[in-house]
Image 1 (cartoon, rainbow, N blue to C red):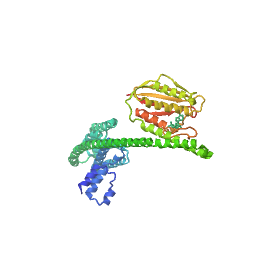
Image 2 (tube, rainbow, N blue to C red; image 1 turned 90 degrees about the vertical axis):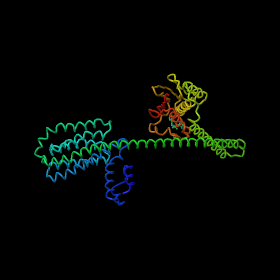
Image 3 (tube, protein in one colour; image 1 turned 45 degrees about the vertical axis):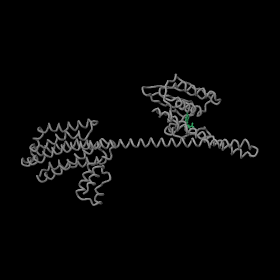
Image 4 (cartoon, rainbow, N blue to C red; image 1 turned 30 degrees about the vertical axis):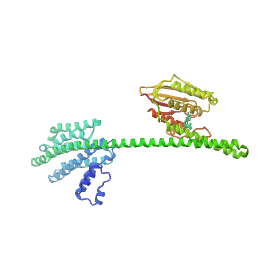
Length: 466
Ligand code: ADP
């Protein structure tokens, strides 16, 4: 038997080890015995999500195994001393112990502990009544008062109370009920033997359970520490790979800009300078190439804008959101295609502390432009409102456009996700992803509400107050 074997058995919750696998490995009898004990001790621990609960289940398994072993021993005595009622009672305890272990195995860890508290206490009481007062078997009920503290944390206070009150009631009623069982009592001689065996067992059981509690508490702490440090490592790694990805997108799009611009520039030169040499089909092909290059330029600009968010930002300052929205309104009014649209501010917008006016501009510009673009009415209308609580500002940009089905709520904030073709509405599918990235930069959240097709959409977003 190697130390490695025990080391391994103590370290891992024995998920991979089975008695069969040990047999196949030709493990010695002692190895198999220890492994079986450890497997039983860990029953159900792999079904628990909270690491700190694991020690309570291990202790439940330990206490149940002890009850099982004790009832096995008393079964033999009940046969030797020919006491059928005692035999039935200890066998009930035996079956209950198996049921508790099985319930733990299949993950019903709360039912198993409740079963233990209710039935094991009651059976201990019945056994103590049968065997007689000179055994002092009812003292096991005193040890049982400790058990709920070892099997539950303070979040399960009701269970702890049940586990204390029940054995205490049994203890108090023992002397009154015991005379009714006098005919089943063991002989005085046998009761004395039982006392000699039982008393050290009571003390041994209490001490071992307390030792296990301390041991597993320490083990749980160590496990939590190691999980925490692993999580910190993963978070750092994730941040690093995100930064790498953004850097990659930035460099690629930056370097692609010039060649794409050259393509559209030379295509234009070709169609202008050599117009007479090109037939109508060739001219059409040149137009396709120019519009493709333009779209690519827009995509590159948007990807660049996306990857620039959060980079090289100046110190956040207070930003008057009225000024931001008025600038956008002015810019749109200058464009002939949006001159007939109205942009209303329902109540003067706030001055938001610690943000960047360029980023606030991006969010409002994207949402307002979308409200006007995805709109078939003659008079597109945008209404901007807001409110606040102690932690957040919430802004709402409402339009009277085509609306969005709620089923796309998980998708439209993803990069390149579009619900319409390029022919229906132009765009790159990056605008809302940019809004989401900005809002998350300010620890906020973005979502939309839409009553139905052609009933408009309201985009809402929050910005955390610092
Ligand atoms: P783009 O506007 O370039 O297509 P966005 O990321 O801004 O990309 O929007 C993603 C998709 O969400 C759009 O293609 C459109 O289908 C839908 N959408 C966005 N805003 C609105 C709106 N106000 N009303 C209806 N649909 C919208």
